[in-house]
Image 1 (tube, helix red, strand yellow):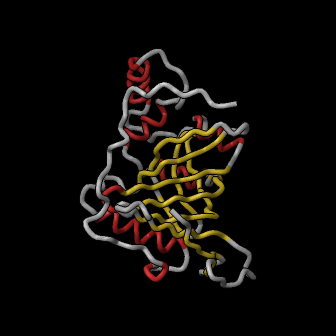
Image 2 (cartoon, helix red, strand yellow):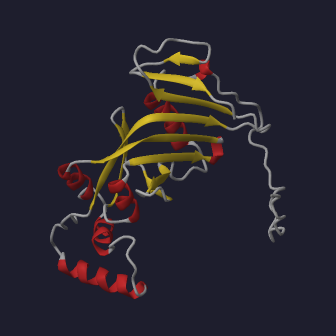
Image 3 (cartoon, one colour):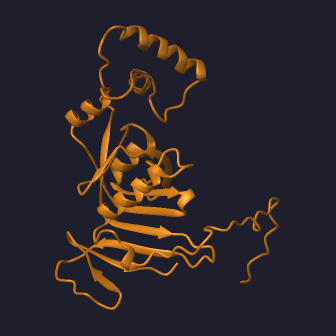
Amino acid sequence: MAATPSAPLSVDISGMRIKYLDKKELFLESDLACREPIGQFKVWFDEACKTPGILEANAMCLATASKDGTPSCRYVLLKNFGKEGFRFFTNYSSRKGKDLAENPKAALTFYWEALKRSVRIEGLAEKISASESDKYFHERPRDSQIGAVVSHQSTIIHGREELAAREREITAQYENKEIDRPDEWGGYLVVANKVEFWQGQSNRVHDRIVFRKADASEANGETTHLGEDGWVFERLAP
């Protein structure tokens, strides 16, 4: 049965297009600074931090899915990273927290527009210890600590004044006192099993190199290269 033609959409932006780079900046396997993804991420992240126009290089889009597979994504800030994984903090009772309780699979995406680079990370999210969450919570600015107590994230509220009233209440309650970390607020560690590095090209023939965890016995081939620390890497068509 033939599909019924759809009505034209009212806003056509198909002609929006910019030149990505003044010169062709290929990203080849020989350009990898490290043969494992965390070291390579640090090289790109450090460059993003130094690049004018990138205000929050640690901003990342976190994608989660519920038990029935309903997806959801939002921006959060990366706070630590290393070979153990990528760490961020949030409210465990929020939608993302509930998703991760049902389905720990998560994906992170960084996009550094000024460099025309993106990094995608896939893995499993796990809660960090209460003591680690306590430590970071008390390193935050006091206003941010109060904000974490004030907001029962993702719940429906009557209006802005409800938040303002609770903020006044919490501020008064903890005047000259240390603020207790809410039990429902804390950190997650995303343990990566796949990390993709993307370098944009003006001709749209982009460069994509992906690292993935593999069996230690996996041998070098024409398309698969052995990396370090149990990783292999491959080039993907754009």
